[in-house]
Image (cartoon, rainbow, N blue to C red; front, top):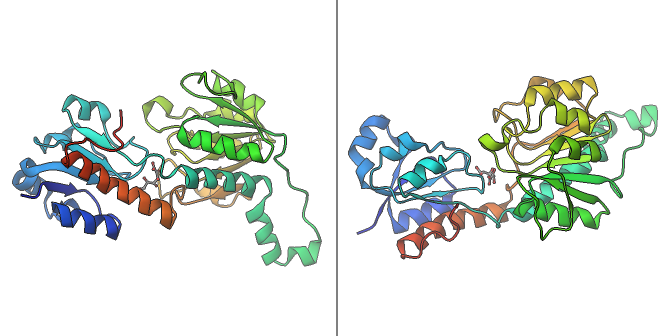
Length: 313
Ligand code: 8YV
């Protein structure tokens, strides 16, 4: 008999097709009444396939008393209550590594977009200002600049390695120093920001990093400084960020993530020193395909008796 799987939200067609083939899949978003849905099917589910943003807390887990594994699309698991899962012996699988390259590339694209003012000068050409006013002011290069990486994990290391090629001096901050890393470690984020030209946030979301990039950190980064966030919108204090950009305490920002996606603070929309992306870090055909495959493979591996391929520990 095929195991019963709950899908919490629509997924990419190749994921849905693979899951439909191997399991009996119920689609939560098609349920007219969630209470009645879980009353009827809750006890049958042994697995959940979920998107990167659908909240999975203890209350949801309790509606599926036989749940053994949650397979989530994305590396970030701040939408899943990991303690609640552990307390119920539920394995959580995510999709690390396969997205490192593209997320790192977007971070670097935002570094260039902000420092070389790519979007601003694109608008300048289109508006006929090059013809009317001549060359725009000079932008800033990144060779020899210090880039502070907040969260030197798998993606952070990729960003560091790639930026070294451009001649950047890499430093980092995070939970702890990593002895095997040659980069300078700053236990204090504000001190690192003061020493950095560019600060890139690529740490996990969740309580431990909530608003860790606050007014003090942005102030330390300074009027010539650039803040890039490709992690979670919860990591920066968005009110403080808008204020720092508007007041000139911070030079520029490249943002892929926001506090209340897809809503972006109105004030940011009119700022020329800000480059905005709609949470695109992993959003390439190649990477999203690989992430989808991992969602499927985590489940297949579990049901073959080998546990998830990439369990979150
Ligand atoms: C995706 C992400 O946007 O992996 C993550 O944690 O933030 C992104 O890759 C998300 O998971 C897809 O909804």
